[in-house]
Length: 447
Image: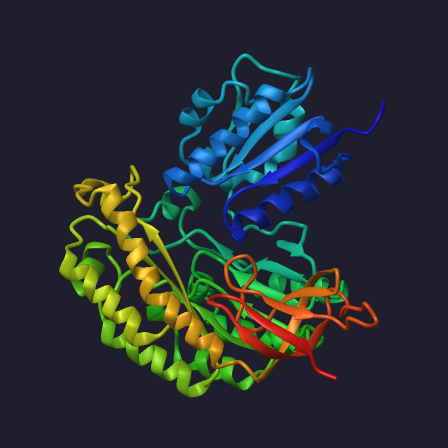
């Protein structure tokens, strides 16, 4: 009997990607071989995103196409956030699914596969929610992408943001034991990873559920000591009210910890923030940003905002525009509010028309774009360390400390035209910035 093959398709955020890699590892341990093309696989696993409706529509579209093109004997399993949140909706929308497993029990994917016997008249459900997502699992909880890797330090969320479905999907926040995280970091370091990116729904809540006094700052300090050969350690998804003085001091003291922080703020008007069930102390946010910039003058701060939240008036939105102009964030993402069943905000009237939501998103980015360009122009003439991620035809593409993968900008580096050489992929090399675009930079190698 030939070895069975599988193809994993992971949608959504890096946290979902880590879970997908975990399932792939379990499948390989069970004797499956991974293939890149779905048509070549005996088993297709689609790790879905179910955070907002556009993400669910993408998941349905991918699964429909796979179900339509499936060959005899091929099995399709849907996993991830969509299956945890709306399994009936998904299986009704895509009849060709054979098995369903949710986010809180993905580690039982092999037991689900064992129960499949080809196409089933109804999907096999495996959605128990009794197993803690933070339980010890005998595998690294990482997703490697080139010379970078996402490392999950926790899952779930204990926040009560009115618009967010994550607690419904993932459950309450659970931190992984520090020893397991450090083992993962050492595993990555042994494989030559140059950048470790810490992810969780809320990294700044790390350790609060463990009862050991652990927190993000102490985890970072232990990681710096454990993997001195890893050049960059980056932190994502920091809650604005949890950025402590100790965290700021720790980041500033260790060159390994990049002066970069992702702080999703969501809005700037106190009334909107109260309706969102978010911290409404904008003065506190300003002070936090000031402390970060004072401790690390070159720090790159990314944030995200929601436009068109229920009840958002033009005056409240202008407050957000003014705040973005004032704070001059390095990176800004903006999303139109999505009315999500089961969230507290679902009880509010979704009274901002879709066209107006999109218009406000565009207006906010019109404010941010010249800020981003000015920030980049200020870097012209400076030399930055760049992690090279790809090359071809005398051109290399990489990122500096200011850029998280997939969501921020890139640095384009012209190689040696006479020698037709490029810096090697996976290396961190110095490059002098020669030109600036709104989001990307152009650079040349430093002799």
